[in-house]
Length: 477
Figure 1 (cartoon, rainbow, N blue to C red):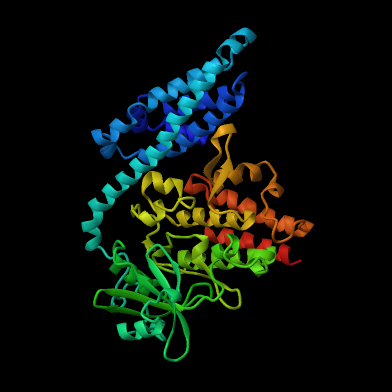
Figure 2 (figure 1 turned 45 degrees about the vertical axis):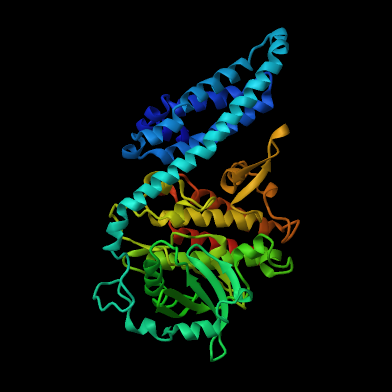
């Protein structure tokens, strides 16, 4: 299997934990299937070590993993995995007397080993995050001198310079105008908080309702966030990108003014902040329309710029809906340029740090490609199908209560087994028509290929758009 192959070839991981983690985890999962006692506990342990297998590739940074402060916390993982394997093998003993005599002892040991595995499930992401922060600090000085996108006033003749015509209707506001529009950022005007700052609802002197993003003073590279938004967003306008109306860079404030999207975000409608009567909540057709519009916006970023633009922060809360329910993609402040055929590493904490949406290949290699956006959009498609958020709580075994898992690992096995009906959100139509089921199957099958662990095997966003167009035709029939 691909998961184990990736681990088996990772010399740095093997050296770090002192064992062939991939091979040993494979043995544990296989043995758990044939356990004769404590079967539920063995299956639960199998799921835990499977999660360890998913996390270990994130540590493949040899220059950091050789350092003692990273090695010491994981020194016992190899021994823990070997002990887990030995315990699961003991649960296969055939003798009824042996099983009776050792059942309680084995159960206690299994609980203990599960607790130790749980500690590594917390520890590995923490170490990965520390390693990533180290890399960010190391390249921070380089990024100060390397502008991913040109400044808004650029007169560059490069192909990615913003044409003067794109700036028609984009105003530079004074800080006093912004304060007046937002009632000095009064708490009752606050409509949300995003990756890069807080968003307020405002009204300009001409009566237009607007959204005002106040870029956080603690945001990393806040000047780059402002410059990137100003460079990408005004570029020949697209019907599925939020329209930029203006900006402000005065004193220590950095602000963006965009059109106000009165129907909130896709996330709001799927996960409970909007009434169940909303079209997005109640209609499969509208949900597919929203996916199609968002995919067209991503396609525009990937294919209409030279070099292409990778959004880097695709999620349901960044797909906004205007008064006519037209979806528009927002939050371009962390997007980067991608030159086809050029190997580049862009360390974006906003990509890595967003649970449930993170591209596993990016986490492992630090390399951003358009396929990173495709993966995140695959998660959004699962949200639309299931009505569930990207991180969900599932019921664990016996005394363990609820266990958090990501939507991808929960949903993909059911889709691949042909059991989509067990996943579908029941709010739109409890009993979808045959054509609706066919449409949703198109969406589900597209999500599966978007979520492939290897980016090279994911579809281009143009293929995703084509599939969603078919799905919408079916859903509209």
